[in-house]
Length: 244
Ligand code: PGA
Image 1 (cartoon, rainbow, N blue to C red):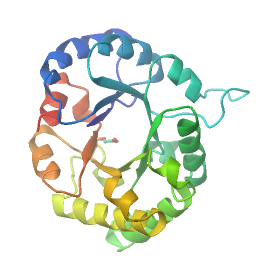
Image 2 (cartoon, rainbow, N blue to C red; image 1 turned 120 degrees about the vertical axis):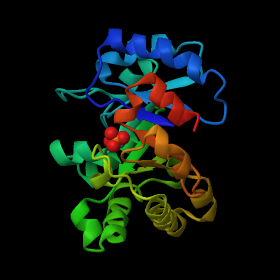
Image 3 (cartoon, rainbow, N blue to C red; image 1 turned 45 degrees about the vertical axis):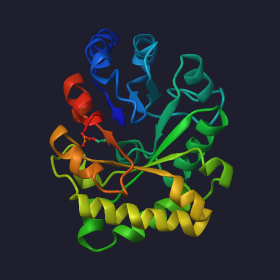
Image 4 (cartoon, helix red, strand yellow; image 1 turned 90 degrees about the vertical axis):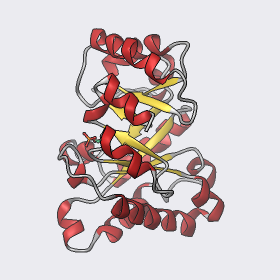
């Protein structure tokens, strides 16, 4: 159960979130919990999560270890502050910051090389869905962005399916649409990496997940977890999603 805080919260607000959130998920041993705040909040989040099972991730990661890459943050830097995960290829990165399937692959490899678990996002826009191109678009993102990993690398990633039309819009994919798309993604995985990889990879659903739809989404056997934006900013709401 992953929370993507996007560009929200200060370090003080981060600490305040954890104070309320921690007791609410103290006994939630059925899942892994990861919160991905802005880079500037990572240290505060790691400190505030200490002694709990809550993990902390970044929202992006560079492919290089260090160098002349203004504005980038590397895997070793994220490791050094205690982050364990990194979201890669979020649709907002693709849409506003020119992230491509090629850079998504490089960043995924960068995360893995430095011991972080990448949460690799794929998803179609509304026009793709409406013109019946969803599977083709996802297959393209998979082929160019994920299929370039080795089997060993693939075994360490988490995939997040986020239909772009459902992000921040209040429009959730129906559980059936989400499950059907997860099945298509899993079929791609099976074709490329084999049955065991397809059975064991975790595929999260993201896009307007809220406390009142988490249970029905999680009721789909194809959906292994959720990546939550807006509803992860509030401790009570994210805890109720975690404890669906
Ligand atoms: P949302 O965002 O839950 O606010 O729709 C999900 C995401 O962008 O990861």
